[in-house]
Length: 167
View 1: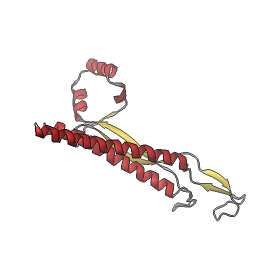
View 2 (view 1 turned 45 degrees about the vertical axis):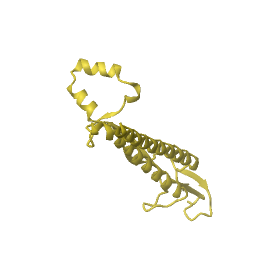
View 3 (view 1 turned 180 degrees about the vertical axis):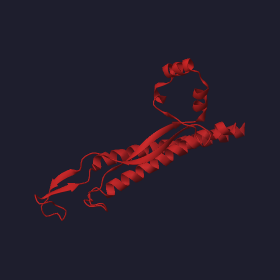
View 4 (view 1 turned 60 degrees about the vertical axis):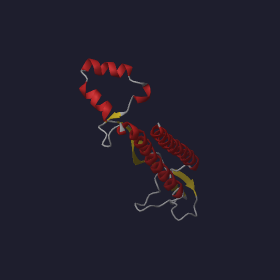
């Protein structure tokens, strides 16, 4: 029974870690929005937080125990919000969790005419980072709201545990 009680908190904790990573990436992007030369000699390249949702071992065990016909039936009846999730065995005992990686954004650098800039080429153009502060702020607000939602879910779980102990 305790497995079911704590899986909600584990799921929310996974979301909290992921959103914290996303906020760290956004903060790094904003801090380097004007960095025209990094260690490798290029402008700073925007980083993105990539979320991979992992459905826990319950669905993984269920899918592995099914035959081909049942597997096709599951694909047809599976809820739309779970399609595309990677089926992996969860190491923390189940539940939906997310793993976050950081990857560079492949979009082109901005080109700005500034002949007085120390990194300007012969024609006076400077390669600037591919960071858009408006996009970064929207990402920060989104991550902040998702973080708050996960905190609320943890608090609701704690309240349910407390109420269950009163019975």
